[in-house]
Amino acid sequence: MSHIAGNNKPLLTRVRRIKGQAEALEKALQDGGDCVAVLQQIAAIRGAVNGLMNQVLADHIREHVGADALTPAQRQQEVEQLLTILQSYLK
Image 1 (cartoon, rainbow, N blue to C red):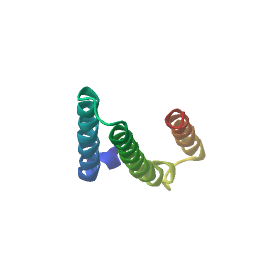
Image 2 (cartoon, rainbow, N blue to C red):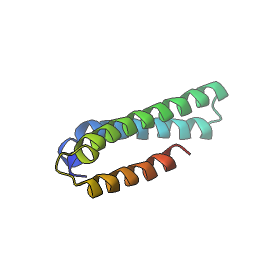
Image 3 (tube, helix red, strand yellow):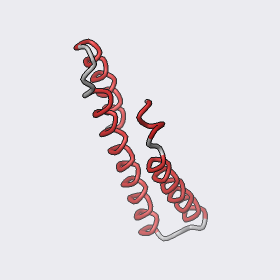
């Protein structure tokens, strides 16, 4: 995915934030944290992952699925690959 290599700083920032949230969740679980705090942390992680997915997905659609240079067969292949990924993500 060449478009990721050129614009990875915001993506890496998101991943680092998710990593910090996951570490905080692990610590809360190890320390016997409050259920509400644990649930809030899980919700925050889920939101952060969804934001990352949305950003990468939007860029992928623009750069790959919507590329003008694609043949109809190539576009169909891109769509099928994307649908497979979305189906596994939404399970």
